[in-house]
Amino acid sequence: MASRRDSKIVKLTFTGEQAVPPVQVFSILKSKGVVVPGEVDALQALQGRNTYDLRFTSDVTRQKGVTLLSGVEGLTVTPYERSVWVTVIHVGLEVRQELVATVLGRFGAVKALKCAPTHRPLGCLNGHRQVRIDLKQDIPSFLFIAGHKAHVRYPGQPRTCFRCGETGHEAKGCPNKKCGRCLRLGHDTSACPSEVCAHSVGRRDMSFALVPPLMSL
Image 1 (cartoon, one colour):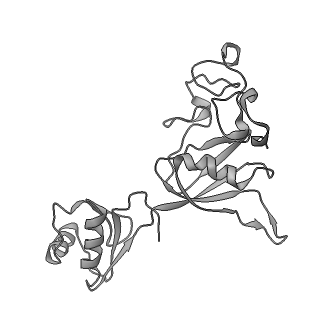
Image 2 (cartoon, helix red, strand yellow):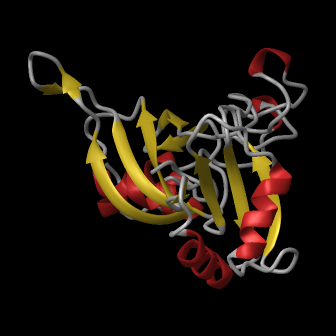
């Protein structure tokens, strides 16, 4: 199954040569007992022939709707998964998997963790990490993990600036000042009022003096 962060959305695929316009989709929904409007609030045509995303108003109405539509001839109803595989690259080999999961856990519930496929045919790991997560919010294109500027990517991820982390522009055109010492926006290194941050624990608000020895990698 494909991934969607909104669990109320399902994919409708109609087979056959004849086109199925939106008005016919709504007619099918009503004939099967789906309340429109009320239990459905959006229908979006997708690329490809006779394929739609249908959004229900709640998880309860989605479950009901999937059951009602499951017997429609020529129609396949595909619920979307709530979680996505997030790939993290440029993290040091010495960084523990648990730390990667902890940092990404700020953005959703971590469900699984693994190393990316190996270099073939040698059978050696390439250092990339993969985390399956139920996203509650989008993850920036990069994160600092144990002092490494890790690149993060997953299907449907909004592109963010590698300098400031905001959307709408790229690093070469970034209008924001960013401190190379504390990594906060609004000032540069020469005007930084903070101590050096402890990236080894994935935090920006702690100085090295406050980090317990066992937390360092």
